[in-house]
Every structure is written in C-alpha cells, then in structure tokens.
Image (cartoon, rainbow, N blue to C red; front, side):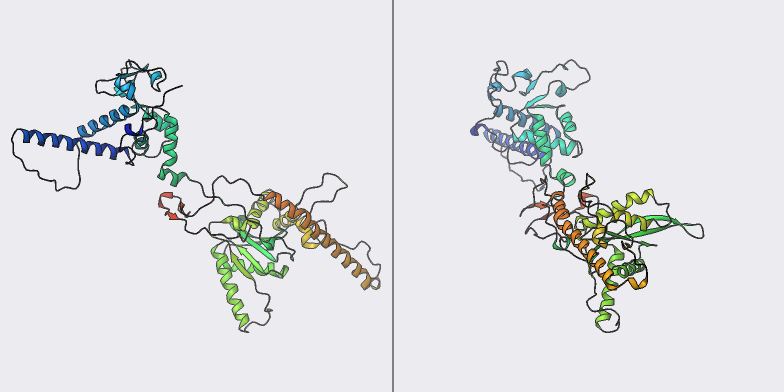
Length: 489
C-alpha cells in the first residue's frame, strides 16, 4: 500500500482552487512577494528612523520582471511540495518511506529546496537540468492541473493531443498520474469542446401516420433531384440533365422524370407530367431548394386564381399541399432521400441505354421490401409494384388468363370477375403490407442506444451553421426543449 499524498484540510494551499490558469496564480504570488518585500523595506526604514511617504501607483496594469515571475513560480512549486509531500520535505528526501508515492522515483532536494527525481539521462550533455532531473508534482493538486492546462493552451495552442502535452510536460515535471490528469484537462477544455464535440442525439421518433395507412399511389409524395447525367446534344456538345425523383411515402415506390436543368420551369413541367400519370397527389415534400420553393409559390398563385374563378378546369379539392423539410435536417425526408442512392447504383451500370430512366424505375419498383422467400413453396416478397398496380411481375399491363374468341364474348361478366380478382389480390397485398412490411419497419428502425445524452434545460450548445469554421458558431442555452414529432422519416 502506498501512502496518499493528499494533505489534510489545514495543510492545503488556501488559494489553489481560486484560479483558472497557472499564469494568474504565478502573477498573484509574484504580487504577494512584492508586497512582502515592500512591507519589509518599509518596516526597516521605520526602525532606522527614515521618513518616507507612500506614493500609490496610478497605472492599473501591474507589470513584472521575468526574475519575479521565475521566483514566484519556484516558490509556488515549493509550496505545493511542502503541502503534499510534507514528510519527504521535512526529511530532505533522505529517509523516504517505502510506501511513499514518490519512493520509486529516487527523489532528492536540490539547492532551491525543490524535490526532484533522478533519471538515467542525468549524464546526457544535450539535455537541460529540468529534463535530467524533473520536478515531482502531486496529481491531486489543482495547481498541478493548471500547469497541464497552461501547457495545452500556451505551448500546444490547443492543438496537440495527449501525447504532445505529455511530452512537453515531462520536459520540466514528473506529474503523478500524468496521463489521467491530462485526459481530464483535455476533456474539460471549452475550446476543444467547440471543435470536437458531436451533435446531440435524440431518440428515434415514431413513424408519422401518413406512412402507416392505406393510400393511393403517390398520395403522399417526396421529391428530390439527383444527377447530373451527361448527354450529347445534336450539335455534338455535351450537356447536363437531371432526374427528378418522386417517392411514395407509403409503398416507397418511385417515379422518375428527366429535366434539362434545375430551374423552376423544368420542375413545374416534370410535376405536370407526374400529376397527369398519378392525379391523386395531395401532398409533396421536398428540401429547401430554390427551384422547389419557387415551384411552390407558382402553385400557390395558380390555386389563388382557381379560387377567384379565373381558371375553371381544376376542381376545388385537387389542390396540392407543398411542404419543406427542416433546414439542415435531412432525416425529416429520409424516406425519399435514401432512394437517391438506390437509383444511382444501377443507373451508373446501365447509363448507356437509350431510355435508362424508365428501366431503372421499373427495376427499383420491383425490389423486395419484405423478407425474400428462401423456398419455392413460400410466398414471394412484397414489392412496391404490388401496391402500385395490384399484381405481381413487371410494371406492364397484365393480360387476361382467358382471352375472348370474339368481341361479343367480352361481356360484362368476364371483366367483372377479373376486376374482382384484382381487387382481392390488391387487398391481399395491403394485408401483407400491414402484417409484414410494417413489422419489418418496426424492427429496422428500432431505437438504438444513444451515445450522447439528450438535451436538458440549461445546457450550453452550439447551433450548427453552414460555415465549416466552428469558431464562428454562436453559443446558446437551452431554455425549453422542443418536443415535436418528425413529419418525414
């Protein structure tokens, strides 16, 4: 068992917990030593009968000579060692007990009354005296932590990690439990927290209701741009085109529209073709792109003209509600953001096709969204095409099993039975959607352990900004934590 180096309450330095930096403590002690010298000089002059008059300094800035700071630094270190290594200091390190924390370092007392340790490098001609015989410091003294903090801030400029701080520390000192204290100082550095801190995590919210209920294809839609795709014009020049990706919030089916650029005109044109194919669209969600914002304003203007009676051909209940995800929060539109990569991967492989976007759309809509069957007798996996068209297979018009021999044989009974069969098939797909796919979503999006604790009232945070320099981010304090449900997931 090693004896503890922690002194009693009456042996602790009375001001060691009152400073936030080592330089302030040294300057304070240098000022105390100056006051003591001035007081002793005044007492000597009074005892000698010399009259004098004190003249207070008019300057608020107190300057020190380098010799005063060096003397105060050594005096502070000596005071630390007297408080924490009292028995060793009183015995001049000549009879150090075996259970002492500094016994293994072979300590000795130098000419300045500082406890140092011997090392195997004492004969090196290239090392300084402090490197050959470093000063021993206790690890549970607040002033020792301030020395490590001073090295981290003034000599490492808050740049180096633990190894760099330890290297510079061991040039002058031998700190007990140095690695533990250095880790604590680095983790407590406010400036390092600004640049190295991770974003606060929040628990995974439940899926919104519009993603869990039955709805027509693309009733709730998310849209995003992907690209660019290079193509050759008639003149031989190489141009750029983009793909507007539409994703159904319920089935995660996709629809692709090719656009020449990212302008509002192209967005409205692609949106018109999409609505002509799927006229049941009620809500559209996108990011905060300028073309999307302008398109939403254009649609709002059209709806105002419809309400005023200037446009008669649109029904009053066919208005589309356009919403935008929260800025710098792409997870609000995760259901359509993740489809971009799903389309990009096969698109890169078959980009040489004449019309790749239609083939890619059919292929992605035929992907399984439930567990793939392992045996031939098991039910096939559910795909977005099943929920879009109500049948299995590729996205083409299905044929009747029994074709009529003549037009007169195509009576109402034949198509009525076929229609009923398709409705039963579609109902079975929706049943599997609720029983299999939603259960799959529950296990896939299950809440994982959060590495960072959630925000609490009173926490000091950094609101993330577009600037990459964290030094320019403002500080804020949490007053009321906002409780909301993610609209798009």
